[in-house]
Length: 216
Image 1 (cartoon, one colour):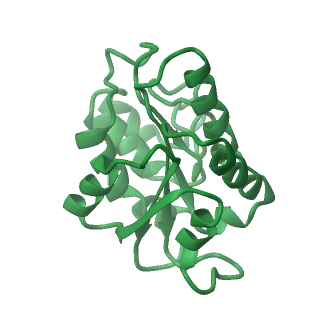
Image 2: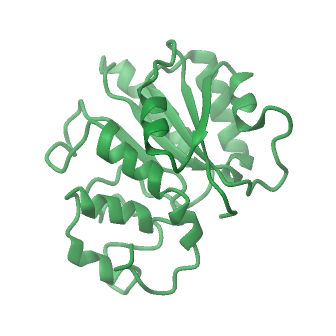
């Protein structure tokens, strides 16, 4: 991440996701630079796309993109924009940054994989807690819980930046009432994150709340 410089106003949005991203790509996701087009791969969608520096750093560390791209982050002609572009960055599944788009896309993708008979790949969507204020996300949460999507995992990075807060039970109560399996762990504890991702969801969509300190 230190190789990426420029007019980056969303550094906290990146640092809040770094540990989650590392655990996913290092221990969980069944995808590699050689399998980015394999129908049987796991899919990762960065809905929290307005702070992608940590995402690019992990992709470089895992060989999806060349490390020499990193110092050009955000510059004219660079593939690494302030929002990730799926047409420019190998391994990126969706172009994101407009809040509220990633989770609905993840629901559709999870549904589509099941319809094609591909039940093993999982779809992971990383969202921010403030992003969940968007109405499109609430519709996706209710729909996914109603139809049951066991291949869908949402990671909500909770750094208490939601405009209105979540009240009793937090984010996980909001998902649980719609039929999701839910858990909360420290977003900095790699062992706890890995264990949460490995846990069975009981045939339902699954939410992992990754709690971190600081607003972003």
